Image (cartoon, rainbow, N blue to C red; front, top):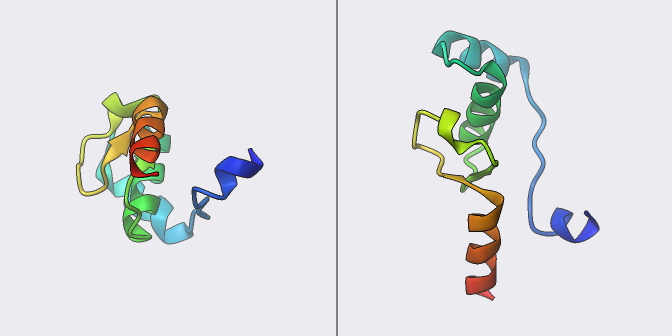
Length: 75
């Protein structure tokens, strides 16, 4: 995990993120909170194995496998 923390940013969720996510009416509230938090923090992408629940594409969603391939191609 120490190596992963060098490559990613872990964000805090704010009350504003929760309120904005609640208004979105996604099927999966937790996924929506993650997405809204990433969007509000201008993240490049979200890494998750559950990308089918992300309905908006303002923040690209990558699977862990796709992320590892991308990182390996940029080094």
